[in-house]
Amino acid sequence: MSEENKYRAAPQRDSPDLGLPKRLREGDASAGKYAPWPDNGTGLVYSAFFISVLCIVGLVSLLTPSNTISEIENRTLVPMPKFSLYSLFEGGYTDSLDLFYSDNFPARDDLVTLASAIKDAAGYSTGVKIYQATGGVEAEPADEPVHNPQIVKVDSLKKPVKKDTVKTTPDYNKSSSIIVVNGRAIQLFGSTSEIARRYADMVNLYSQTFDSLQIYCMIAPTPIDFYLPDEYKKSSNNEKSSIDYVKSLLDSTIIFADAYSELAKHTDRYIYFNTDHHWTGLGAYYAYRGFCRSAGIEPYDLNKFEKKRLKKKFLGSLYGITLDKRLRDVKDSVEYYKLPIQTKTSRYNIDSGRFDKTSLFSNVSNYANFLGGDHPLVKIESEVNTEKLLIIKDSFGNAVAPYLALHFGTVYVMDYRYYDVNLPDFIKSNGITAIMFLHNTFAVNSKFASNRGRYFLSYKPTEEAKPEEDIKVKETDTVANHP
Image (cartoon, rainbow, N blue to C red):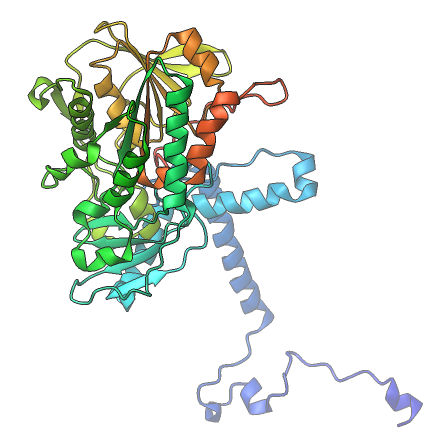
């Protein structure tokens, strides 16, 4: 090749040929389905249209008030990040902005529901299906029975689950699966004797440390023993066996509050939510009755209370995980029972070191109605007597605590997950006369619950290790959030 030809400019073309024959590039009729290559003007129109749509959606997202909670997923949505030059150059601001737009684009809940409906229509809800979990609803320390679930969807009970299709693991935080059956979502349960023994040993340690105080222990069952069909129960450990095992290990001076037996008598009532992992206000009442019978106390009859029911229905934590359309048809209602006595309720503000006035029921249409959700410390006062009870609890205790105010003049409700305190000092300075441990079966079978119980006995606050700030109430209550 000559030097002249080597550097000769290539012939100009109106559009790239991409190696295609001329008749295909120019849209020759004989080319059949092939269309002419778009000119630059058409491409600009397409680009302008696409950019305009993105801008309009972005503006609508910014101008439309964003929700803080996704009701159908039952979780807190990502808020608008705060801008700073550091976060911009470090990259955190753009990452957070991306998450904000993902959670707050227009009609998000409708589109999520539509996506779930398309999956159901495509056959994802037929038969028994297990989905490997990629993460929990909440990270520790929120010991709720909604961690790291797989999902088992059951449209028919004709075929039982095979033994190897659902795996139960000993650690609470690896609870194996959720099964949707008969219009109810149930999380399968797993336990080991070693972890259950650790919990019993922790409760016994309190009995030995505070030998002048009465110690109570209530273990809250979840719906599994009461509502899971027999052919599926082999996929999960039996909760009653775990509860009875812990009870057998407790010192004789400890009063075990038998909530399970009382609940088992009323499984035809609305004692557990269909779409959430908690018990209802009525279920908590029967747990309270179980406590009274175990403690030799006469319980208040249900007809002594004024029943309240919130109009708005809700979808709970387990629907937020499964998004199962059958659960949307059985939305839950919040029912609660006003006490027949006068009480004063206050919530401890860690920042100010004072108690702020609040109420027993917050009129929120989900489980956060009880005590306004999970808070580090709540105090309920009445004039029934001078007894002072300290409840060390998870979220199941929120619905039970108001009933206990009928028999104790002061009830301190402490969430063991969100409050750091030296309990010997707290008990002495507040004149506590009794302690109740109230945890659900999943928490009892977690190392975290027993470790935290021991931690409170020797905790020493320092300026470097301040107690955690008051946790804002989530309407999801979680999961897991809460599990």
